[in-house]
Amino acid sequence: MTVISFSLPVLVTNVWEDFAMNASIFSFTQTFNFGFNPPHLRVPFQCVMGCAWLGILSFYRSGGKDDSSTDGKVRDSDEASFVKHTVAGSI
Image (tube, rainbow, N blue to C red; front, side):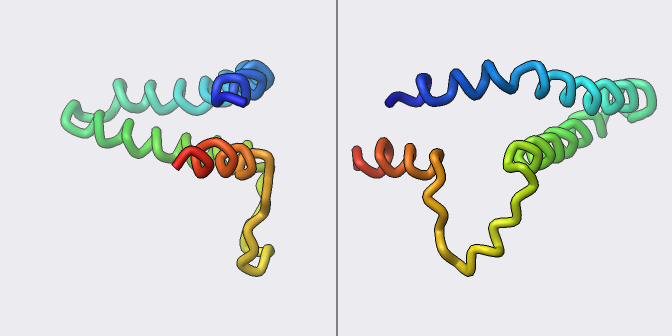
């Protein structure tokens, strides 16, 4: 199983939902950024918003699960299994 064959179905399934969520967040941040922010703060503001977007998307895609309830045990999810069998197996 290659990375592309594993990732492509997930991308196709989530692309429109992710796009709608991205547009709902970044349309407001870009309007604020170019309408009210001084030029020297635009790049740092957009970097902070990008990091916030990654956190929101990661939390949303994880289903809001809290991994602290595993008592330190590692779950062997599909993604972890995929990485273990491809990356760790090739090292």
